[in-house]
Amino acid sequence: MKRKGSDSGFTLIELLVVIIILGLLAGIVIPRVVGRVDQARMESTRIQLKALKGALEQFRMDNGFYPTTEQGLRALVEKPEVPPIPKRWHQYLDELPRDGWGNEFVYLSPGQSGRPYELFSLGPDGIEGTEDDISVWNLASGE
Image (tube, rainbow, N blue to C red):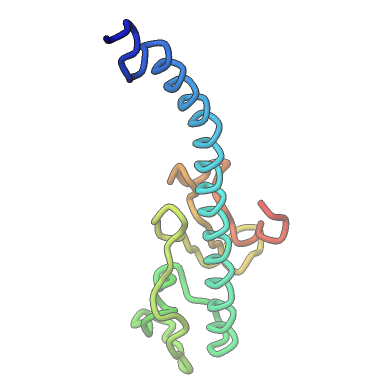
């Protein structure tokens, strides 16, 4: 004899409770994971900026000047053909890195405010001149 309600399975209320619990867990976990991804991209960008700064310093020590804006960061990978031609050039990087969001770094020489050059990432929004830009000159302060 079969009893009423003894069928195995879940009631609608049990399913709703499980869905609500999963939703709450997702609401807690997803923002933490997304925050870590953004943090990793920022840190990756800072590391790449430090590497580029080191390569630019090597270029200057070898050649007596930084690459011009026209020569760009490409001068660290390929010998420039645009004057001034470096006399003691060698390959400083195997390839040019990109920032944490896959964008090219911006390089200008000479820089502003008496700096020899400007080197920065456009940050998450990809727009120059906004608050989220990451400059090589702000790395020491952790910005």
